Length: 121
Ligand code: 5GP
Image (cartoon, rainbow, N blue to C red; front, side, top):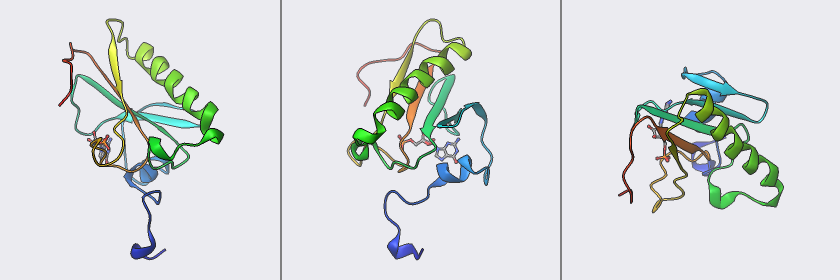
């Protein structure tokens, strides 16, 4: 596909991670999703949980993604337990330009390992 034909939902760096075209520190994987450490961590634990289906952003999710959305959230819980975040953690989905999204492949940030402030910037 020509560059000018690429849309938000076209391939991203996360697609390359799913296909193992670029390396990532993967902490969990199943048939629907992948979890790997953020390359620029904002907390001692900063993991991204992504669906293998390249949904660009939360605003693009549809009713057909109902079960997948629940699976992603339960995967956050599973990874948090795996990484022993027993004191708590934060889950963030940046969506669109005002949400601060920079990679247009839906992802959930799992942040933990320190006390987090509220509200975020
Ligand atoms: P967003 O700002 O879209 O919510 O979050 C994108 C996240 O992806 C950022 O926290 C950024 O550090 C992370 N990221 C961007 N490129 C890569 C990469 O190539 N590998 C990994 N592991 N994380 C990345």
